[in-house]
Image (cartoon, rainbow, N blue to C red):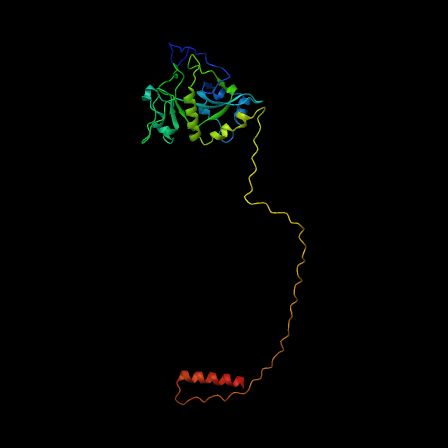
Amino acid sequence: MSRYYSEPNIPRGAVRPKSCDWAEGDIAYLKRIEQFTQEQIELLELEKEYPLHAAATNHPVIILQKGNPTSKGQFYLVCTVSAYSSGPENNYLAPWKQFVHYAKNPESFRSFAGSEIYQPRGKAPEAALQLKQGQRMPKPKTSWVYTKHAWIVPESVLGPFKGSPYQLEMTKESHNDLLAHMQRSCHYLKKRLEDPRMFGGAGIVTPRTPPRSPTRSPRKPRSSPRKFVPAPAPTPKIVTAVPATTCSWSRVAAAPAIPSKATSNETKVFKKLNRAMAIVN
């Protein structure tokens, strides 16, 4: 029996929690990260860009999609269901109202039936996620899904969710609705769906990057090889000698006489002029 709550009325047709071979929409349990083996950690580390968060372990998870069998085992695409530290002690406070999750988009949270649903302004809220008839989550008032996170995990890290005495299953409509919401919200979900661990066939292979289509049309091949044309020889420079010219100086007129009424400054100027003319002559 569950340690979360007791279920007096088990729905008709309910089965015990599964331990393997989950179907899409089933609720499974993601083990604690301390329980992972080295081989399981290596399988998880194949995803380097968006690795599994340690805080996502030890939580119930929704089987979003089941991959093809591979040589490394069975893989599943999952998302976590969490109470986000909500409970009677904080009056079942929704995660988007908590300070620690203040930066997250409230519209990225989906609520199971019984948990608070975000009411956006100007448009209708998202429908509550439903389980099959007669089923309910172990924590009906505090069960939310953050649609921006999804991970690929091997079957070996999943186990039966013992929070319920029977296997919990989402309705087909709610499962498809959640997956469509995550495709709009989770920017890397497309990479997850195309991951070789999900669709690797006989083994896990690294997908090759498709070649880019050329942006320019390829050049047409020449009908004949291009002829080699030698570069022209440099033109020699012609230097013409310039004959030296003989410069003859003719005598200049005699130096002017100093006026009798010249000032001292004018007298100095005339004396300098006389000395210069004497040198020329």
